[in-house]
Length: 185
Image (tube, rainbow, N blue to C red; front, top):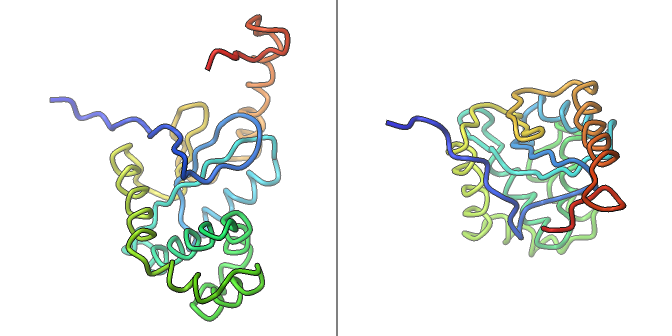
């Protein structure tokens, strides 16, 4: 019997992707203080391509599913990353009135935002991320996939610098083309 976890799903068209550099897939929730630390360190280091996926478990952080749905509702108005950053910047203000104020501050249609965050499509989107995380063996937040390997908990800035610099070194010596990048994909 094979008891290994499924691989982390490949990038999807509706994934939240930001940056240009080595790929870091982050499974996190917005109520998790360790996820906020991971976010701060990733931001500090820079030079990474971050894919954010939800691992919003109500049993661990009761507001996590609602916050994930709110972020997805903001995404439907092209404001996922500003909403994401604001949720991590002030984890003490995550009740509904604060979410509405944040939506308004970001210029969102607040009525649409409120309807979208409660919609079946948004809830299904969050549940898909959680389901895929569980299949891939994620058990805690944050879990980051750095160079294809799972890292549980906030990574050190040294580890993130290592990920960023390892790819730069590989590009510098890669003979695939004159820019050091494989264009076959």
